[in-house]
Length: 295
Ligand SMILES: [Zn+2]
Image (cartoon, rainbow, N blue to C red):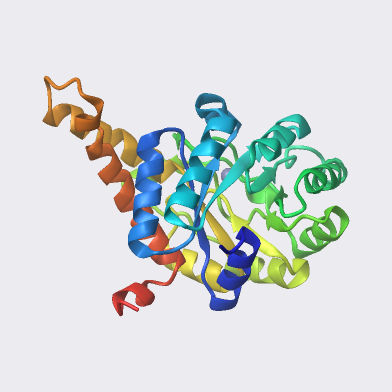
């Protein structure tokens, strides 16, 4: 079985990205795993602090390990947006494969200092741990927003990226390159798309020389996403699109069976709705031509 690090290296060499999808229940996990298996591509499952609080860090780690072993499948577990060393250590001890240590709300120097400490502490627990650091401002909350926040001042520069990676020793960097957490209502309706600063991504890649993650991928223009991957993005995070599909699918399941109380008869509509979104994003991350030719 390949490690997450090996798969990131392979993705980088073949110009693909690993899809990262947030889950907080079995519907989402079934949809993500089902879509990945159909396409036979590696996949990352992520849980933020709030999502871990709801599901439990140890139970989900045990569940993922069991899936990985039973199906001999490259599915990995990421502790998304972790805002304290205590929570990061808890996830590492539970058996998460990677940790997003997010101190991006702090001034740059403090972010560097605290991330460096976290990298050392996490690698002491598990030397194979993939640790990601965050710089810049991409907003918070994978939710529906009424208004677009002004994130223009929080864009990352190649100089910052290089300094951050060299000073902290992170394996993966998440920069701010036009991406944003959550979606605007117009994006949910499909009327507008997020646009990415591709030149900035290429500049950051050249300076930082490390794996890069794109957070807040929901609602991003497809062509921008393809160009971002070609410019050096190795992991693409999708959350809000899944949450929107989860809600719609659940509503459809309930409407279709007005008198039903059996969860496993109502919930497949939600699994199917989420799975469609995951499948289309995974195809994009892994190069659609690859699948079109059935290779
Ligand atoms: Zn994120």
